[in-house]
Image (tube, rainbow, N blue to C red; front, side):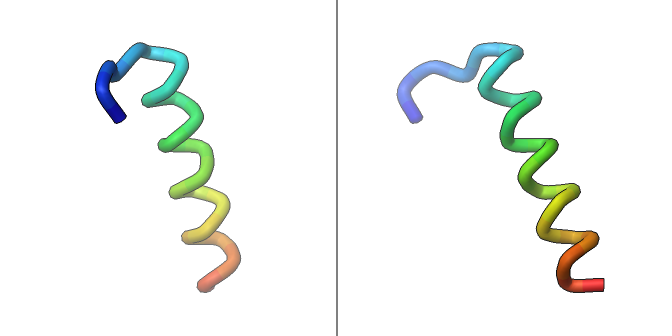
Length: 24
């Protein structure tokens, strides 16, 4: 990722939360 925009960060956080819930 070259630029980190708020939208991109939000998408990454959502993906991380989704993976966390899946692993749980």
